[in-house]
Image (cartoon, rainbow, N blue to C red; front, side, top):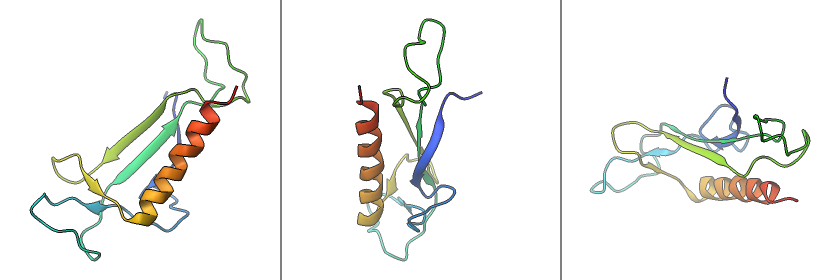
Length: 106
């Protein structure tokens, strides 16, 4: 059982912003194109406050998430890279800032 709870990333299930999947990184010698191939996911997951372990029962069930964020890339090929457009970057930045603000709440 995972202690992590997924939040919206880029290209994953739901995609409420209609951002689509990231663009596939094809190597440093190939310029990206708007109509280039798209695949993969930038996934985000938090540890909700209700998750506790022995000796770590110091958070309320309805409190801020634990101060750890899981970020994973599911990419095509062997290179762990992906390409984002400005809208995807803004969405990812907003998700990261929202999590950081909540995780730092007293």
